[in-house]
Length: 300
Image 1: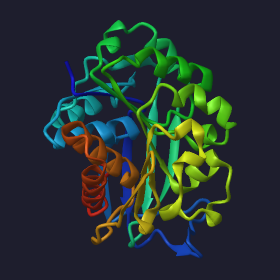
Image 2: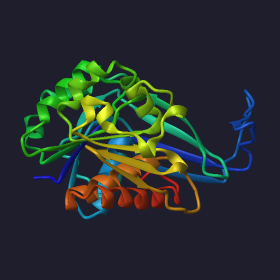
Image 3: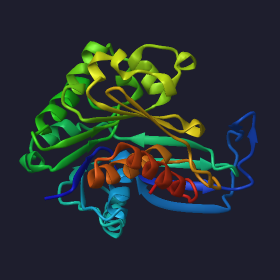
């Protein structure tokens, strides 16, 4: 039995960085018809589910991945890279004519612009065929923005067992839904991990008006018995459980690539929480692992 099954996207990531990628007012300024040369190139496998799974295995736990891999020229590259990261792939699903590719342009400060392509596919249809997932010890659901909300509700409720811990990222689109709708998911989870802007959408308050350090999660009855973790970039992260608030500052490091910072935090948090059930230690480990991720090119 796996310590965690990570459910979500599997992507091939292509990174480019170079002086010819000119910028103006925080935007890359590239001419139509222009040709640009990259000084640095990096290829890796990514996607929220992959990034979290890789972080879990780096912390000494075993993790299986559930997501779609295309039967295309990238298939063997993806499988090989997942194997080198010690991620179990026996639950992965394969689909003809499917691609998920991200081209990532990095500037000298590690900020990035991402161009993403994904062939329309239905992970939910693949999910319904897999009874093995029902035996999951613990489950992580990445944001899965292209899955219908009601299908996502069915998936999460199906996997929730008496002994299963369920960790969830939500997409921005989902966070905008009425709290009564979101409660269909919240009822079946143990830990919700979102960023500050996503949290503001959930509680229907402008981000600028939220005093995260003093916020009382009891104000949101649907979440008052859940562990809620809010990451807020350079401001650090905040944790809420019942009447207790937690705060974790960022861990300073040289930023090389910000891609996957949130996934890195999530992986670090989950890995430590599975070991200790200690929220404070888990937040600290999340911050530490995120700092390692942004100090290198690639999200895992």
